[in-house]
Length: 406
Image (cartoon, rainbow, N blue to C red; front, side, top):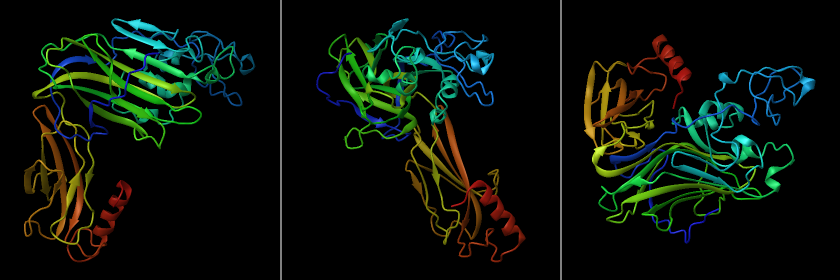
C-alpha cells in the first residue's frame, strides 16, 4: 500500500463539525455522491432472522443470495430474507476494484467479510442496519450510497479463518478520477466532504489520511487522523461532520487526484465519506448554510440576554429576531450581524417572554434555529413574566419540560 513521503500536513483544516474560519466560496470543479455506482446482492453480510432462540445471521458465509433458504444454520429452520427491504451491498467482492476512473485497493484481498474488504460503496441504510448501527446512524449528512471503510464489520467473518485481523492489518486506499483544475489560479482550491469517523486504538492504531497530487507528481498529505489519544493528530468520535480543506495548489497545475486511506486498522470502527466536492474559492457560495447550535438561557435575570450560536458552515451573515409569538409575526427586534453572538441594547426589550430566532444566510438559502426565553425574570416559576405564578406558568413549564429545558 502506498505511503506518503513526509507527513507535511501542508493543508489547512478549516472546517470540522460545521466550524468554519470563513465562508466557503466556490466554482465547483468536481462532485461525487456515489449514486451512480452499481450495487450487488449481499453475500457474506447478513441480517438477523428474528426467530426466537435463534438469533443467527441468515447469510453469513453461505454465499446464498436473497430470498433463499439459510443453509449455513439449518438448525434455525428455513429463513427467507427479502433483501430489497434493506438495500444492496458493496461495489465488488474481491477487495481491489475499479468503477469508472475510481480505483480501490486492499492489502488482504480474499480475507474477511466479502462486503467490507477495503473501501466499499454501499447503501447507507443497509450498512447501518446490517452492522447493528453502533452510531452509524449518526451520519445524517449522508444519503443514498456512501463510501465506507469498516474494519469492524470486515473482521466479523471469514469462512476459513476464525480471526481475519490475525492475518494482518486492514489497509485500504481509493483514488479519485483525474480532475481538471486548469482554471484555478493557485492556492485557491478547497476540498469538501461529509465524513463519519469513529476511531479505536487497541493492538493497532486505526488511522485515516487524505492526500492530493497535482499533474501526476508526488502525493502530498493534507489530512491525517489518528485513533491514539496521545497523538497530536488524534481525531475523536466525529460521526457526522463536514470537512473543508484548503489546498496549496501550484499555479499552472492542470490536474489533480485525491486519495483516501484507512490503514493499520483491525477490529476497530470505521470511516465513511459522502458528497465530495472540489471547488475554487471564487466568491460565490457552493451550498446553502448548514445546521448549527443556538444557545440561549431559558431564564434571564435582565433585559439584555446573551444569545450565542455555533458557526453555520457556508453562512455569510446571521439575522437575529425577537418576537412576541412563536410564528414571528409580532416582531420586537430584528438585526443583522457577522458575529456568533448578540446582546440586545439595554431598554429595547421589556420584561416578559419572547421567541428568539437566529437565521444563517447566504445567497443560496438560509438555515434557522429558534427558542423561547424569559427576559428580566427573577422568579423561575413566573414563566410568562407577568409578576405572578399561576396555571399558565405551570402549563408553560410542562411544555419546557417535555421539549428540554436549560
